Image (cartoon, rainbow, N blue to C red):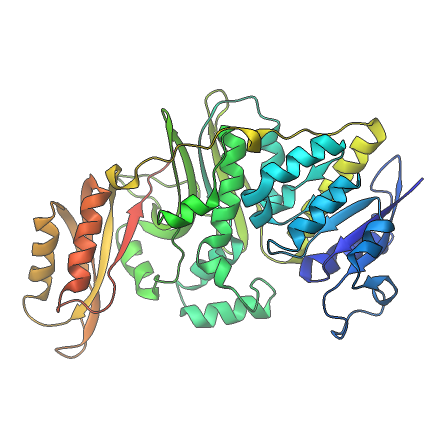
Amino acid sequence: MWVKVGILGAGTVGSGVFESLTSGHFRRISDSYSVGVSKVLIKNSEKARSRDMQPYLTTSFNEVLEESDIVIELMGGINPAMEYMLEAIRKGKGVITANKAVIASHGKELFEQAVQSGTNIRFGAAAGGGLQLVDRLFSSADNIRKVQMIINATSNYVLTGMKNLQFQEVIAEAQRLGYAEQDYHSDISGIDSAYKLAIVATLAFNQVVDPRKLFESGRVRGIEDVIREDFEAARQFGFDIKLLAIAEKNQETYDIRVEPCFVPVGNKQYGTHQLAEVHGVFNAAIIDGQLSGIQKFEGRGAGKEPTTSAVLYDLKKVLDNMAKGKIDEIHSWSNPPASISDMDTSVVTGCIRTVSSDRPLTVHYITGILGHEGLNLGNVYQKRGIHSGDFTPDWFFFDPISLDAVHRALSKLEASDFVQGKPVFYRIEPELK
């Protein structure tokens, strides 16, 4: 029996799914069905496409809907992707999506409609597809206490490359290799990671994490402020820099955030973080469960292939469910919202990097501001300029203190005549035990 699949979007992943399903290698993805592509929805009919794809192209969503049993949404963005998925579900079509923004922000509407319509929706490719995080968490009976992830492989590739190159050099290389989009803002700003974290945290804790609350409360920072010299300072004291997405249960509240962190590598005090050796285009997740303990999952994240593989895995699951007359009911997004902890009261250890003129008393002045706010300094790393008056970076490591005190110190430093631009704070994330 044949099942027809409609693909919404012919970008990097959409073309990858199309090629896989029409190449002959994946038609027997199911023991019960043969799979064929019905239509591929595109927005721009003038754009050049592959010759093989031409007969399948359409600009009409209704045409895709009428000719498909399963709809794979790979358009990105909130609308019309959200509207198309809801309409497909109402029509009883199986739906597969890699759209982390829609799932994180509107999962409740989609999943409740799927239950009502008696059809399947799968979204493993939306968050850590190469790690199969969605399936692991959806099927887990464990009490998850903490999740730490490198969940955006583009940013990880950039940070890995910045040990030797400047940001613009690395991002250009990533674009040439297909690891970064032309518009890479969502990747390096932490937005992509935040949507994925909201999905993972909602499944892990069975309470809804609204990504808008993360953005509004300043819990999402990207890698835009990271400079090459930061890696030199980090290396001096046994650290590397990673963009981490973290969700942790603290009694009745949850600490959920995305930020670049100093992670220890063979550090005498902090050990070696489990994610410190995850480099390049790889993603990874550490899941700490009450019963299972600490588990690590790692896999490729950037490029067409990992997401295509995750979509095909979800397609296989939908076909298996169709053969059994079964649907996977997802109720996590119908639960109460997670109570997010007050970030300012959290205790942090880390360092602050400033850029200031290389002149007498500058460092003394900066340490005075930090000390006035209660920051007890340990190591200080200075990178001196060639000429007096040059602007150079300095790194100030401090002992545990409230994040509120750190923010006060940052504000005073930014307002100071001695400091150029915005000072940058890096939290130290010790090895997970």
